[in-house]
Image: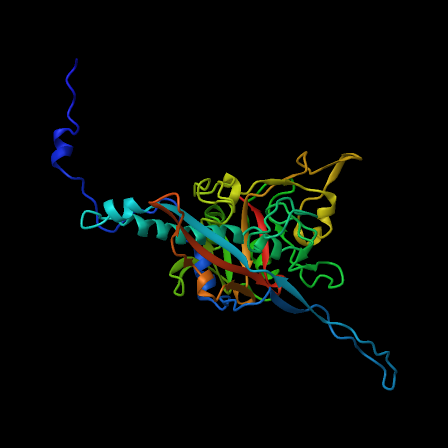
Length: 404
C-alpha cells in the first residue's frame, strides 16, 4: 500500500499568500459616461409617486394667420395639448448567501476581504450596468414593428428617438411612444427620424466632417451630449483630426474626457451597442427570471430593410430599394440587409428626464435578509430599484448608425 502524501507541500504549509486588505479587482462591470452625465445634469428628477409619469405635450399650433381688415373668421375649438404616460419600471439584483461562511469563516482579522460587502457592491454596480444597457433599447411589448418583448425594461433611446416609420439601430420601428400614436392625430410632433451613415449597399462606412455637423444640426436645438462606442469614437476622432478640429476636454461634472464639438461633448461609452463590444456580457445581463441573456444584448447586428421603412428616406438617408423581381427588393449591393455597425446618439440632456423612485425602499434599497424555515444557514439578499426615463420632445435628439 503506497504511503499517503502530506496534505500541504512545505512552502504552502509555512508561507501565506499576500492579500491586499479591502481591495478586489473589478473584472466584470465597468464605469460609464452616460449614467454619470445624466445624474449630474438637470435630467435627474426623482419620481414622488402616482400610477404613472404623465408628460403634457403641445402637439400643434393655434389657428390663425394673415387676414384682410374686417374679414370674418370661423372660430373652432382646437385641441393643442395632449400627454404621454410612462410607468415606473422595477429592477432587482439578488444573491444567495451562506451565513455560516460570512459570520464564522470570512470574519475577524484573517478576513482581508469582506465577502458580504463584495456581493453587495457587485449588486449595485450590476444594476447600474443593466439599466444603462437597457437605456439604448426599448421598454415596449412585441407587436407592430417591434420584434422583441421588453415591457419590463425602461423606455430607452431606440423607441424615444424614432418616427414610427424608420428603423432604429436595433431594427425596430416604434409607432407609439408614451402611449401616444405617432403620425396620427398628433402628427409628427413626437418624431425623430434615425439617420443612416453607411453606404448605399447597406454596409457601415467612415463618417466625414460635413456628415457629423449635419447630424448634430438635425435635432431642433443644440444637443449637449454625443455618445458612441469606442469604435465610433475612434472613427469620429480620425475625421476631426484630418480637419484639424480635434480637441479633447474634460467634463468637470463627471470627470470624463471627450471630444468637444459645437455645444456638445462626444464621449465613448463601453456599454453603447457596438459591432465588437469590449465587454464580455453573456454573464452580466440577466433577464427578469434570472436566466443569462443573449450575448447580443449590447451588440449591433443587422436587419432587413423593407419598402415601408423608406417613407422618410429623404431624412433617414437609408439606401433605395431596387427590384430584381416584383417580389424581391434589393439594395445596390445585391440584398436588402442593413449592417448596423456603430451608432451615435446626439442628446439634449436638458430635455430628458431620469426618474428614479423617491422612496428609499425602491431606490437602491438593500432589503433585510430573506430566510426560509428549511435551511438554517442560507438567505437571499435583494437590492431593489425603480425608475424610468423619457423625453417630452424626441425632436431634440437624434440617433445615427452605420459608422465604421
